[in-house]
Amino acid sequence: MSTEAEDPVPLSALQHWAYCPRQCGLIHLEQAFDDNIHTLRGNAVHARTDQPGVETAKGVRVERALPLWHDALGLIGKSDVVEFLPDGTPYPVEYKHGSRHKAKNIAACDDLQLAAQAMCLEAMTGHTITEAALYYASSKRRRVVAIGAELRQAVEHTAQAVRHMLTSQTLPPPLAGEQAAQRCKGCSLKDRCMPETDLPLSFIQLRAHLFDVED
Image (cartoon, rainbow, N blue to C red; front, side, top):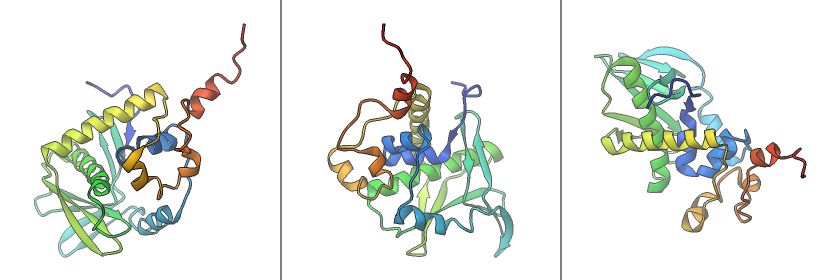
């Protein structure tokens, strides 16, 4: 299905959705964002990679903050670092704060964002990308991620889910149970989200009816 007439989905929204759909809605629907120690550490890690630039290291061309897009999937964003192998194949490297020994379900959110970058680069360059890497600042180590069929399918499904949320202007419900226990504690938007209240309407929906007059 063509998405050319629709606004593109930011690559960052895929990671936000995978972590928590409600967090994604607060950021990309309601334009809400607050910092905490985790987001500030992430900003510090990206201080250099957010500056566009090209350099050569050990014979490999390295580009920072390279704009990315995928017209067919309706995605847009930028990479942290892309290393171009001798044959021209791009190798995306996403920088994250913390250690590479993250909980598996949290690490999967990073994998999804990285796979989306790889798919954008494939569409842009015509090269097939079979792997990419996440660099974790605390451990100063990379974790290689295979860009396989299952991960590619997850990117497509997540992009569709985010686009549906943006089109419907509906804020997803908060997480519950074990997921909430794992993810809400470290989320900078917990106070805005109010997961304990489970409000049925988003701010956007309430604002749309602010001046309705009852008959």
